[in-house]
Length: 100
Image 1 (cartoon, rainbow, N blue to C red):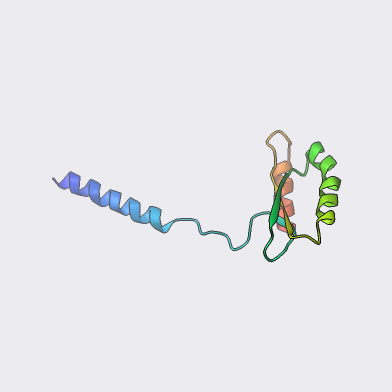
Image 2: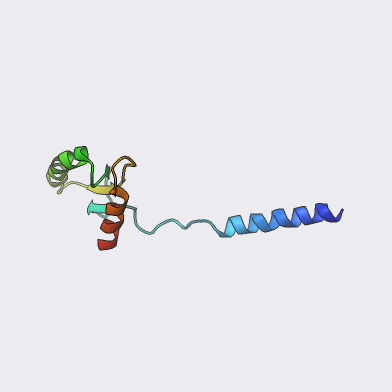
């Protein structure tokens, strides 16, 4: 009987810890907001890797799209997403976040 009571108390403690340790919702969206409008109709989210050749090739086109729709209700968010096979990409992401 005592061991059953101990198990129930342990589960209740675990439940209380799980409820109190929820991650809060961030006040701003993650990533770098390129263009911001107060109530955007369209949100363009781009995943970018600092060391990726394809990301570097597409970046000028991305800037052209953002500048073409700058007067519209469009917000651009760039997420830095280091790919595992690009060596040191994670450290570049850390450096970019630190500079931010």
